[in-house]
Image (tube, rainbow, N blue to C red; front, side, top):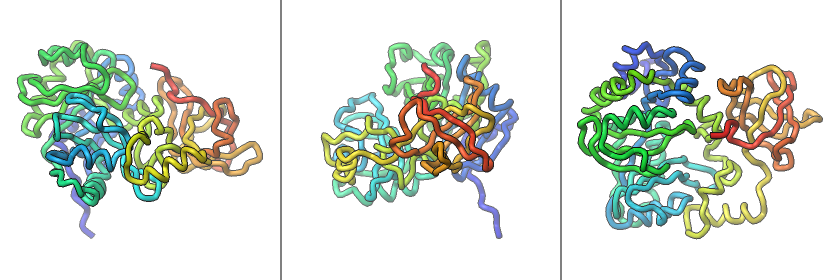
Length: 365
């Protein structure tokens, strides 16, 4: 049987130069780590790190009907966006679950960019097209875009050397299109997945090598380092951010996932009627954070028990927090066991390990 050929981002050669340990992720060859997860995690929390996130999908929606289409397929209120503003949202499916979570960028009137998860690009495209009764123009531009996320308290200092755009004045979830490192038409976005101050830089593939070299030269005196997927996961989990495929999927509703804040019933969207009923009747399970009080690390799929060793839920994400130096996790539990302070047990290798339900984020920024 012929091996599936992995796709490579435009930064692939750089990962090898920097000693990245490469693995398969969403059909791409991606760096899971370089010098080690804890080291890379701390680099982002205390300094500045660079993630290649070019595997993410970019879908352009333009023309008449673009706003109406995105309003229909996403749970958040796109009409609140102005040119230069981004929004976190999700696409509900027909059964109360989630097709994908995504970012919506309003470039200008009737011109939007959706940034979706790498493993869902084709699925998302099919879903969006199936609801396009509005005449909008849909284009998958994923393969022509390279994307770096530069994250950490020193990110602004480093990147400001490369652009005349006033990064300090950029509010969270805003973006601008301008010159960066002498590259034209760069989308500079004040977003991220780490909880730290940071920016995401979108360029055409042909500028990828130049972008990488410019950023690492600018950050040399501040100890800038490349960061792999493993530290990206520990960083987002400390903030209680959902990961599609783990914490949210086609069978979890946005309300159960704690995403009621991006679910706006002031408009009509796919399956909004069901979700509104769910909101009014009340959910029976909820995504909750927990801290382990014994020994052991919770992993995806582990059972969550009550004090009588009855199954009340399932772990969706878990790790040893490099910042807190203790094991943390998230999982869906029955609503009566989801309040902060509740005592639960994680079935770790057939041993009940005590844990306490806590409010996320696990670390306060």
